[in-house]
Amino acid sequence: MVPKSVIRQLRRVVGRQNVLDAPGDVLTYEYDASTLFKAKPDVVVLPRSTEDVACIVKLCKQYGIPFLARGAGTGLSGGALATAGGVILELSRMNHILKINTQNRTALVEVGLVNLELSLQLAPFGFHFAPDPASQISCTIGGNVAENAGGPHCLKYGTTVNHILGLKVVLPDGEIVNLGGECLDAPGYDLVGVFVGSEGTLGIATEALVKIQRLPEAVETLLAVFDSMEVAGQAASGIIAAGIIPTAMEMIDRRTIEIIESSPTLRAGYPSIAAAVLVVELDGLREEVELSTRKVLAVFRDCGALETKRAQNEVERAQLWKGRKGAYGAMGRLAPSLYLFDVVVPRTKLPEVLRRITEIEQQMGLRIANFFHAGDGNLHPIIAFNRYNRQEVEQVLKAGEEILALAVAVGGTITGEHGVGMEKSDFMHLIFNDHDLDAMRKVKRVFDPRGLCNPGKIFPSKKSSEREGTKART
Figure 1 (cartoon, one colour):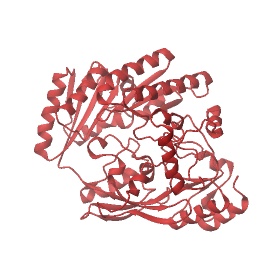
Figure 2: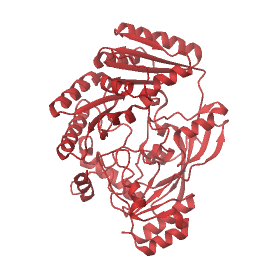
Figure 3: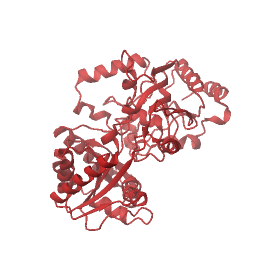
């Protein structure tokens, strides 16, 4: 528990109305977009500046109180949950664009800024921010930094780490430091690279200097319909083998298509005959895009696509993307609870992995839908279930474990962009040995020697009472 005396000090820092400690007020912050885990903080504080964050962190250090940052709460691995109680610093009020520099192609933003809002504000200047997670309409830049988020367009443009030049960070002792900067090749250790993807365990980023991209001269969005996921996977591999790197390449399976098309507000026009659809987007110079489009359409024909479609304008392009972007939300029609996780496998292993996932679904009597970034093999299986049914929850957890092990067995890994968080910490041993994990813990201790900054994340701990207690409550 956070002592009342500390709560009074927190209120002096940010104002009484910006400190929440009533049980009903903090209840909102006990979960994220995942339905598997819950953990309630003792106090939620809403700072408005880096200096506010530093003062809050110093108080937590002084009194030995665990703390962590939180943005929009759209995470899917429990990374923004207070597993040890303590203080959540909710950064959504730090949401300003501080500077746009089109000459240097950079923008300086506060980390509570919503991802999509940055691109909307850049559009009049002819620029955009390339990383685009499916939750970009609500997720924040800070969350993208914490999880090294990707999204459909990371195939060509890379994940968040490829677009962060510098960070302002409050370290776990309250010191404010600047990592990186406008220089593209800063000397010394790449501390920005260390921090991005560290899941909020090394400190709290408050500002980010990001790269911005010119809007492309031409964009083509294509849809191909296939009679099996295996053939669609072969088409995805065939496009890459032809030397084409699409901006995005997304695959959606039959169950997901049925849910999308049965939703009155989401219907995207995916054909009912499809066992799988492949959405491919190309951008760049007009001549380059036209040539690549012809090559992609040829791959579709060679792989026996049942039907192809080429968006004729921005409205049709948005319609084709509507289903993929809204797929997770639409899955709520299947069951009251969803378990969405991400694994990465080599592209050539996609057909094999998808067959095995279908077998796991049938063996355990579950309903699993799949959509994924086909270009980089980042799968997003979704298991629909009722979290109030204890037996069903156990089957879901078992299926998740099997899919994680399957991904590793074929040469993949346990997460592509959602992070390890609470969800996968007990499976880190599948890809790292004790020496690897000890090296990571040493990095954590350099930044956070007292272990107060977002504890209970990433590192496996079989005796973790927080995790076991959380599972028992689901």
